[in-house]
Image (cartoon, rainbow, N blue to C red; front, side, top):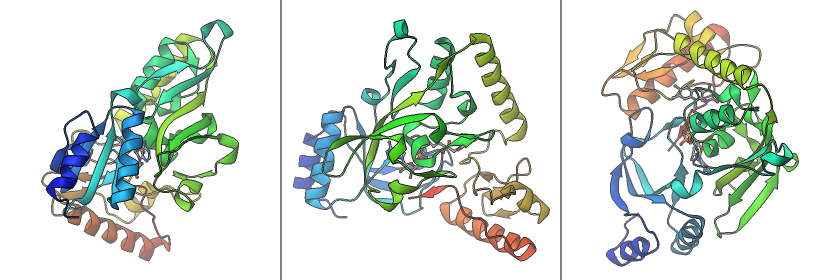
Length: 310
Ligand SMILES: Cc1cc2nc3c(=O)[nH]c(=O)nc-3n(C[C@H](O)[C@H](O)[C@H](O)COP(=O)(O)OP(=O)(O)OC[C@H]3O[C@@H](n4cnc5c(N)ncnc54)[C@H](O)[C@@H]3O)c2cc1C
């Protein structure tokens, strides 16, 4: 996408934060991998986002919104379009009905991190999202992924999702109208892939604060025990096939420690592909294919990536 200087000027005039041209995305993903985006913009508020989406549609400019990039593998050649990151204007958390009504429904901006959300809920003695303790990333990304852990998933506590579509229209979708699956929001992909989640409502209940805090701490501690430390990764690389665990299958195929370039199957947790130093996206993709092939040969099961690609 060759964006001429007029178009660049017009784009820059639509936003309050500086446009980062030819911006390497490796600094925006937990894999620490990825070539440049033609432009990266931190969007500070809803009206700005609306203006941008309308502009992109009119000018046929491709774009993608990302959260913290903790479930994302960006190609070495980068993304020939505009990457959007939701900024401070999308990080609010509040009780919908106020404390006085014992309101358990909370409204959360899409760019709010799960860490902050969990801490806020502990502070407010609200139970519901403890299972997300220790999952990095934003609540917006977590909706798209239907993120989950310990047998629970986000869709269970979701009340509604507020999105903005590529024409700049805002709509709030009640949970009952949405179809989620294991680590996926089905209808998002079937219908309007190009909408941006700007906020969610989550159902929590008032409960004992110490119990909530202890549960979060125990989930975080279990993660520290089971997951690799210090090597950039995107969490579980493959979805668990029904009735089994991708990590178990990969380990059973003897693939722990397998390397392609700087990418490696973690010796700590076989479903984590890690960047053990200088890995490229091509390394990770080749390693992914090797793992899939061997697991399929050994078990007949075809592993599907959980990680998204850009
Ligand atoms: C160490 C580690 C542990 C992890 N553990 C877990 C786990 O236990 N369970 C789990 O489910 N996941 C886990 N993950 C994966 C990841 O943290 C979650 O999927 C998280 O919810 C992704 O959020 P994000 O903001 O980083 O999304 P990104 O990775 O930035 O994006 C994910 C996808 O959502 C899209 N997207 C992001 N924000 C928006 C938005 N506002 N509107 C529209 N589309 C959007 C992106 O384009 C992309 O397709 C782990 C990751 C790491 C690194």
